Image (cartoon, rainbow, N blue to C red; front, side):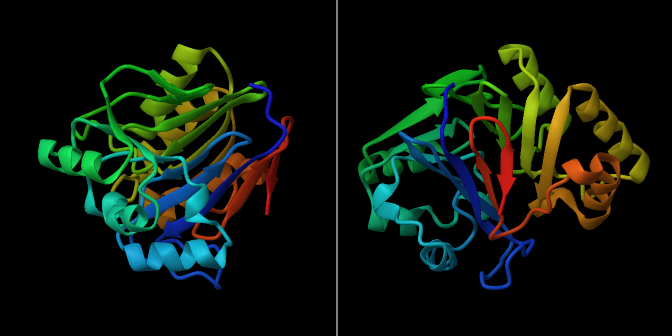
Length: 247
């Protein structure tokens, strides 16, 4: 994937990475590529989501796609507010959303695509992992020449399993693993095993937040050192085609 500019902007997170933005429990980020603008999840509160988007000068009118990782309230709570502003979007979900909600979203947007459990290319060089685990949660993979950028909402199925599927299916190193790692209830020895697995998968950068937990985040920071990126609302990570740029 030849990419001159790509930017990931975290605009909803219970971890605060920028004091100018408000934080509540949940997660959402905007991915901007030369051809597509994708909203990954919508946080838990639409009003706060729109406020943070405005503060970051991110226009919903430029939005092409909404990618919903799973059906939990803290990842879909703001979707109505987004669709009221811009209904001209294509939405990607898994079957974990109720059939009634999927039907209703179809009447409020351009289209709704239900992803099965297989790795699926949803846009050129942009993939869903497919639904994984009991929550049928999907993560987003951006395939670049320098490696894979992986964004997880909550990683209920296991962040290491998400990384492993992406690497095995696309046969590339992992340049970035970002989002909620769902390790807040894990003991240190379990977290350290997961960190070791992720490092063995040739992962260069990690940016854990949301449901990762403070203790697990600290362990990731100790393990990845300068290749750990502090997460949270307001964090911006760019990619210039060769290297990540943290703002």
